[in-house]
Amino acid sequence: MKKKAKRNNAANQPCSIFEDRQEAGRALAERLLHYRGDQRVLLVALSPGGVIVGKEIALSLGVPMVMFRSRKLPIPGNPRLFFGAMTEAGEICLLSDVISRYEIPDHYIQETITSKKEEILQRRRRFRKTSLGFDLGAGE
Image (tube, rainbow, N blue to C red; front, side):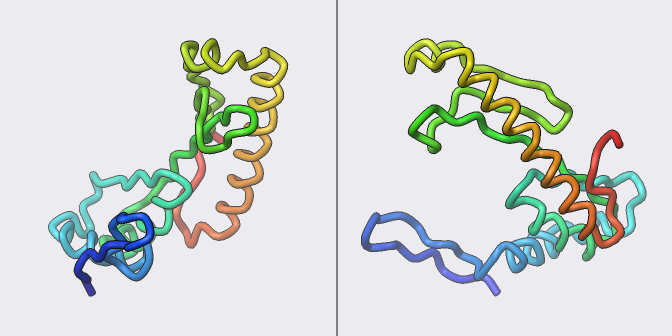
């Protein structure tokens, strides 16, 4: 199951030690078996990638899982940088120093927040349809 970390020669970055996130979840679940069936355990999976890992753990341990969703608020023209984040509940954290440094206009901030709210709602609907019996949503 576990593989040696290799180096990606092109970027000298470590490659994954697991085939995929499902395998990683099963490996982590093996280390958490002492929590199997414990009714005090609630697994919180961070979306998007943590849901795949979390599902494997929750299934293995027989514990409920909820998903915590947040979305990054990207800088115009550079989606890898962000000026804040928003949770599924609508809580927003803005990085004022980044907003100032990149001179991000207020209208862009508002448009991005509106867009991310809709994205969160769409993802919530989609994941709830495939929840496999787990409560993957908050507050509905």
